[in-house]
Image 1 (cartoon, rainbow, N blue to C red):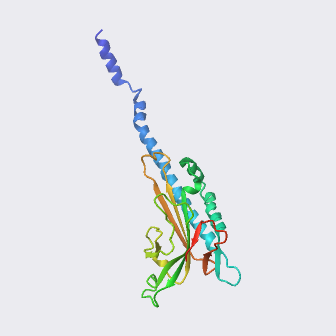
Image 2 (image 1 turned 120 degrees about the vertical axis):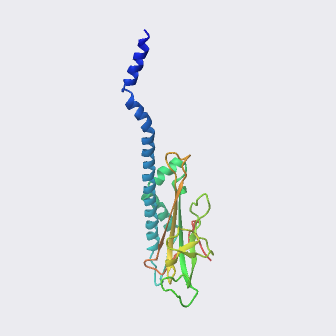
Image 3 (image 1 turned 30 degrees about the vertical axis):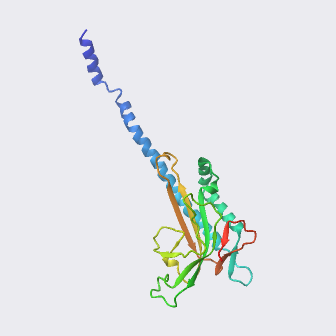
Length: 239
């Protein structure tokens, strides 16, 4: 009778039927974590690419405005800005599902700012022909003030605020411009900011802000100005 318990112990030690189940129980959480993490990385990369596409496409739309008549100055109006803003939904359809997930309209989860910048000479000669930031100052001609801004604060380029030259590799900022842009020209500047919120583990993982800027010279005009006719407040013309 006493040998029976010891026999069961020997059989238990030699039994291998549950090894696979134990291994699966140990490995499965790691595999799930790797899979979900990989999905979030792919989603972030796709979001970054779509933000790049949005900022490039909108900058091309605005910069291709054509002058009318004998003038060399082209104008855009509130309809042009709204049309290009709405095109972001076609270029970046993820905004619709992300807005639903965050319980917000899609246009409130992405920031798209517009500005036209004019460079004015402040010095007769430049010591470095490849860097003319010391010879020109950048002023905002008009800027978008009516688009949705991040909760952290407005990111549009303000009227009357000097745009400081910085290195070309510096991160986008509403108060700076890449040093290589300064010169006898004008620019259309589009700034796009999208906050990527992880689908899984949003309570524990930080959100990542994706910011991109595009700087494009007007294609057919010397300057892209803003027409205040019918303006609904989406943009402001600087005095």
